[in-house]
Image (cartoon, rainbow, N blue to C red):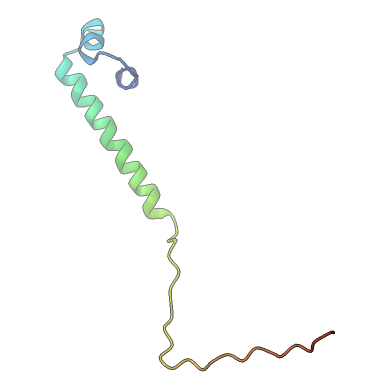
Length: 73
């Protein structure tokens, strides 16, 4: 019933009436279902590795010297 309520143009009150369920109770089930989905997606994000890469600051960097390439002319 909850999945039917989430369909586009679904009437929660109409579905509750057809099923013989109180509309307020069905609304509560829909809300609880959405909260459970949100919690599950948040748990998935918490378990995923961080996308940030640590940055190390060097206080006095020495300039890097690039090797000089001989001209082939």
